[in-house]
Amino acid sequence: MMDHSVFFRFIRVFAVAAGMAFTIAVHMPAAQAAQSAALQKLIEGAKKETTVKGLWSATSFGGSRGLSEFVAGMNKKYGLNIKAEFTPGPNMQGVMAKIASELAAGQPASADVYMGNSQAIHDSIKVNALKPIEWAAVLDRPLPTEPGFDPYAPGNIAVGITSTVVGVLYNSDRVKGDDIPRRLEDVLKPKWKGKIASTPYAAGLREFAMPDMLGREHMVNFTKQLSKQIAGLMRCGEPDRITSGEFLMLVLTCGGDDAVVLQRTGAPIAHTLLEEGTIVHTRYAG
Image (cartoon, rainbow, N blue to C red; front, side):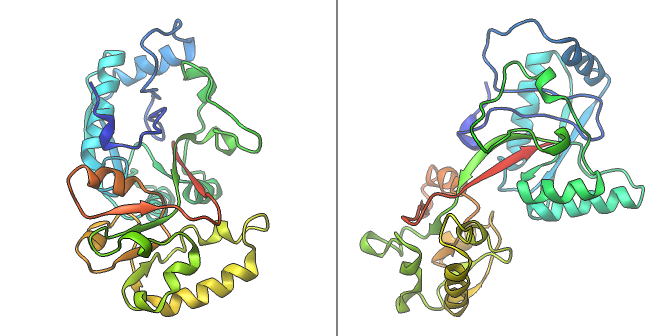
């Protein structure tokens, strides 16, 4: 049985595509309807494969262990015998840039499946890096939808698999009680100057700048102040830099999954949301 504590609680589907002749859905109900002809065709193609290559950060999607567990579940569900081959990679957009570069050079892709954020999916559209899949034809059940959100990426090049919520990651041994930030302005207190970090790609800040959130002017002013507070930059997926005390906070995060996983090991880390609003990031597979 797959240990989903390694991955996000919100996982619905793991789809393998892009360069392979199959797509598989995982984490489905035990009782399911007869497989569609499209899915059966993909399963037959998958039986001819020996490995599936994954490339992402060691702290994203459970890293090597996460890929191995998904592939093991896929093998069991569909009677396959495929081995997982994981390579630690850069951030999500960096991985997509690598895949796009390999495509342009006519080289084999470093990964058979891409799992990452919406920005990278947007980047992939420009270079046709991902193979379109008729997801609705191969999934056991329709994916949940809501107004303004389509779980299928444009052109069916990827499918939404999970969501994370933006906030502030902090060292729970060094930041406690009333010091835990509840609002953006809390991280600007003089006591945090030179002790906190942000990301080089402004995670979360863009969304707060939307007109129906805090607005561009407000966030430009906040970002200018934040730039004077931080001691450095770190990417999402480097929680050890928080637990070690190198930085006491990361403002803002790509989601709180690092804290969920590491808290189970007793690491001094926690994640807090902000009163200004809830920002949700969607992760895709393609």
